[in-house]
Image (tube, rainbow, N blue to C red; front, top):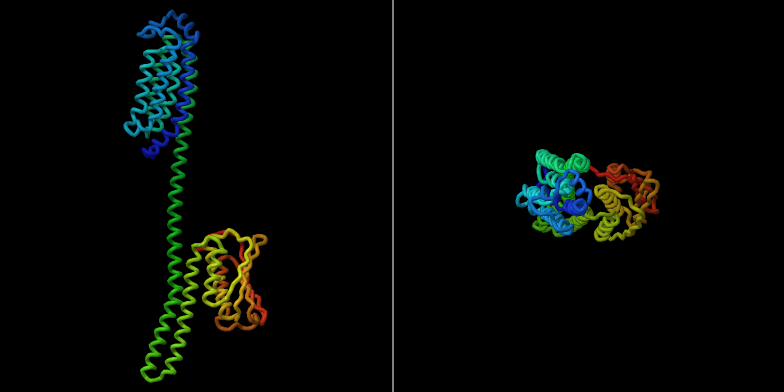
Length: 417
């Protein structure tokens, strides 16, 4: 409870004032009943005590006047309860101090119904003490002692039989109050634990997010270095060579080098577009949206139209979706470079916790039993990416029949390193 801030305590006071007000209204009705009941009068007559001995004032003329005084007392306490958040913000001692003064004034004026009001206000004062004070043990002890002294005085007035009846009610209320105290302590302790766990999760999330951003930046920097930087460096060297041939009056040789430079620049531009498209796709939450960006980039770069026909997609993490998108990008790039076709198809299947994604082209195909040409289809890179997903890559192809690259992986969601 000591860790609760002032704002949190004010919010707690706002949340409990409704039930406390309802409780005080109920106590008011009970007090009116007791005050006007013949049971109290009989008990007083048995002790030989009249009203004038219990109060410095003359007794009310009728029950309506007594009920009005009780109602006024309850209304004053309810007002203090309702404005307790503002009173606490001003001075927390007044949250309990004001209603205690009102209670003492009422006991002096109306001692007959004092036990009801006294017992009724005990849980109100103790609950507010538990909320307002960091260490309410001392406050609760003082309140309990004061109430016990009031009970002793009351027992002297009405007798021990009525006092014992009152004590039973008081003990019952005390049990409820202390149960609430223990329950409140457990709630506050659980809240602290949850807040501490939330802070730890926030810190872990920030660390993971920072790590992911750093890793992604390194990957983009590496791929831009391998594509755009090296491509531009090659173009610069070729143009310098062409300039040298022009100085040597060899325009034909210079033209050949310039044509080669144009091809190199175009390839670097295409690869850079693909890399930037992959970076954009990481902001998308679904696999179809990511593949749509990828296929659009492939169409602009290589004039290949890709049809996407996806069925149900497992709930993969963003890192898994990123790796799947890279596999599709690399496979479509291989189609553009080697398949000699302008059409491709992407389909998917989901069965028994196994997800299959197929990239199909309708190109020339190749003999999978023959030794592949250097760099042909980049199967090693595809397999390495698939292994990070706990999946495999299979390739079916034959000359003149096109090629099908299938990514098979489990549906388990996980974050990749």
